[in-house]
Length: 272
Ligand SMILES: Cc1cc2nc3c(=O)[nH]c(=O)nc-3n(C[C@H](O)[C@H](O)[C@H](O)COP(=O)(O)OP(=O)(O)OC[C@H]3O[C@@H](n4cnc5c(N)ncnc54)[C@H](O)[C@@H]3O)c2cc1C
Ligand code: FES
Image (tube, rainbow, N blue to C red):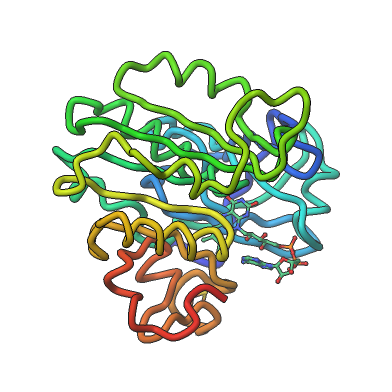
């Protein structure tokens, strides 16, 4: 029988980790094994309420469970934040193209995340770690508003032990407990240990952060075709049918959500 693409697959919340006061990571177990490529997204259904798009933050090699790191911003996400272990949800997908790992091979990889934008990048990091021989250096730069807004706090010290990975984290506003860098994430983009002639930069975060990071990367000498952006436009069908996610001639759900800046640079208002 042909699969109904609008019919969610049943799943159960197996674990919930509170990352920050407004962000939680939900580990969900679908009824059947579920595959996705890093950077692809799913539609998550809260029964009786509706659905919203999220990019899994877990390792795509794991098929029986998916992690979703979700910020509480409105109707669906606040209901999700109220759910606990054992609650039923649904998933549709995966949708979109995800990260073009083949184009990253043999390169220095710069990953720049802002806030909850580190979620899809964590999935990308897992993919890079498991094939680390395919890449040169991996450089992670992450910015959060305050130290209390940093996600994956327990993973960051573990990742900093990985030889190939160079990490720097900054917070917009410092506090007595924070002894790291204070400033916008662009402040940790100077003196990058990457070979600009052979590098790819992957950026995910709020639109304003992506705008200023992209401008900074261009200024540093990254070509537009080497900068990859996750465009989180409002979405509905996820299938290139409803037109909600249009960016110029593209549909973010079908042609993205990951785009090279080269594809978008002449489109008006891409940061809104
Ligand atoms: C491809 C994709 C991947 C995403 N991945 C993640 C993720 O991993 N983690 C995460 O926390 N969020 C992610 N988002 C954003 C997430 O989909 C929205 O936060 C969610 O749809 C809000 O739903 P709501 O019903 O709670 O909010 P609503 O009640 O619908 O709206 C509340 C506020 O959120 C804004 N908003 C609504 N929908 C979106 C949207 N799709 N994108 C951005 N802002 C929106 C509204 O403008 C409004 O200001 C992703 C979005 C897309 C398109
Ligand atoms: S979400 Fe419907 S066309 Fe993209």
